[in-house]
Every structure is written in C-alpha cells, then in structure tokens.
Image (cartoon, rainbow, N blue to C red; front, side, top):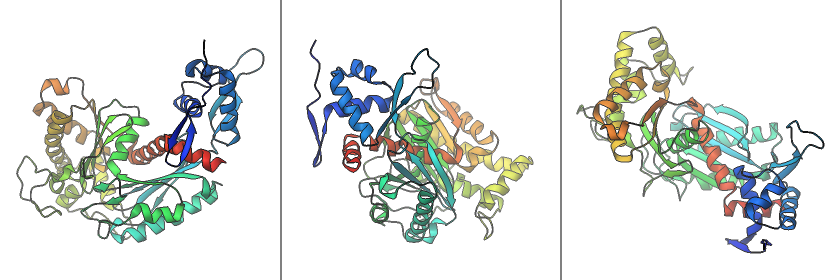
Length: 407
C-alpha cells in the first residue's frame, strides 16, 4: 500500500504550507486523532512523515505531546494537544453601557475576563483606547506575550461591514459610522483584527459553547433588537452589506406610531426593546453611579411580582414573537435563542415569545423548533468571538501565520 509522503504544498498568500502538516494539525485540532499512530491511520501518511510534521509542530510550540492521564498498564501513552502557549486570542464585546473583554488560548480556554466601564456614546476612540489599555494590562498580568496575540475579534451592536472592519450607519452610536475599528486596533496589537455584529458572535457562542442545534437564530433584546443566524456551527449569515439581522427596524404588527431612532415610526425595537420597556415604565436606563440601573430595577420589580412591569414585559414579548414567527417561516431554524436583559427575567419573555410563535407559525416550521433563553447570558458574545478567532487561527492562512511566527 502506497503511503503519502506529504511533500505537496498549498499556497497561502505568499507562504506555502505542506499539505501533510495541514492534515496532521487538522486532525489534532478537530479531536479526530490524539497520537501519532491515529494520525497515520486517519491521514494515510507514512509514519515517518507524521513523525517529521509532529516534531515540527511541537518544536514551533503549536502542539505539545504529554503523557495521558488515563489509567493504563505499563507506560502511559503520549497524546498530542494544542499547546496553551501557542498563542492568545482577544475578544471585545462592545455594548451600550459597557464592554466585555476576554483573553483565551487556542484551546478556547478563557484565561481572563473583565468589564470596561465606558459608554458607547463616548465615541470609538475613547472606548477603544480604554479597551486597549485594559487588555494590555491583562496580557501583562497573565504573562501572555503581546507578540503572540493571534487574533482580535470585536463585536459591535450595529450593522458591520465585515470586510472593512467598521460599523455602517448604526443608530445610537455617535462617531462610529465608518470609523476604522480594525485598522485602529491593528496598530495597537499588530495582529489580524475581525469586526463583526455582536449578535452574530452571540449566535456563534451559543452554537459552539452551549452546543445548540443549527440552524440557530439568536435574538438579542437590549437597547435595540438584533438577530444573528448560524446556518451551520461555523457559518454566519451576514448579508450583502452587513445589515442582515437588523430586525429592530421591522414594523411592529400592532402598527404603533412610536418614533424610532432611525426616523421611522412603529419599529419593533422602539416598541419592545429593553430600552422601550424601561421608558414605558418610567425607569431611568442608567445613572451616574450605576450604568445598569434600569436592568437592575426592572429585575427587582419583576421578582417582586409588580403587575405593571410583568404586563410590559409580556406585551413586548408578544410583539417580538410576531417578528420571530416571520423569521421562523423565512429561515426554518432548529433553535431560537433569546438573549439580552429581558430574557433573564424569570420565564415571562420566553413563554410569551414561544406562545406567539406557535400561534402564528405553521406546524411544519415549528414541529422540531426549540425556543429557549440564552444559556451563556452575558458571555455568549465572548465565547462566539473565541470560536471565530480559533477557526481563523487554524484556517490555511492562519496556519501559515502560526508557522511563520513560530520560526
């Protein structure tokens, strides 16, 4: 039987990556093989070729070979894993009142997570400078070399031009329209920068970390209402111009004439978002002392059984459910995840959305549909960003960068 010597190479930009090396690393990253013998059996490569490629990957610090912890007789077998020191990924989840940041290694293990207390309306430079300063502090504190940051992923709460790395005509984000977020951060981290819509990252996080079935539709109900659609565990539907999922500007079925920040009237976001519910109840969204005052006060009233607050949340959920029913017919998802502050208030929001969807959508579209609240709560976007960064790090171009920097 002929064994492949793995000498073929794949061109990636100006770099070339041996095909054998890609096979070996791909099998370890995917978990299909954990030792040299398994790699040879699954790849069809000669054992000598596998040994050469494994030695190279271990030597460059991308993989490590350690003794298995499984209880066996005799000498413990040696297993291959991604090295925790192979590199660091950074995730920034920007939201209205504050930003969440995280460091993770290439095994997707979270190393550190913190909050940056800067409002989005302070402008992109103020927010990104505060985020950068805190991230550099985390890198130093956890002894992660800045030159081994493999990728930075940023989630923004508005439409995003994925190719250009900037927000496009967002509402409630003064100064962010067209601001070169990717370029600005690339100068500070000297690493590839990915900018995406925050709900896309949340959907990726729910699919990857919570292992929910796809197609998956994530609905974030916060200062506005947005959606992210995952067609497979790794594929995000972003649309032609980054506007996919901006569902807060769909006209509410009730036909209300409430003015929206976009200039139109009757948008479901203006009627049923977290911000809209707070406004209807006369609750301030934030105070100088507490940027999350509104969320805490609404949660307190719901926990106390305040009938006015309960009615407001259920009414908002019914409006959202009508829109979700339309999306269910359009995309036929297997899972709908409701995220944001309203989804964390008992079961009132989820129950009311579920009732509206099952009433409006046809049985074919709902017979296997699961509608649930986020299992990751405020961490979904961070986990999604880590998943996206890890995918990119082990793409052909990412592997080429890893090898080049490893040398």
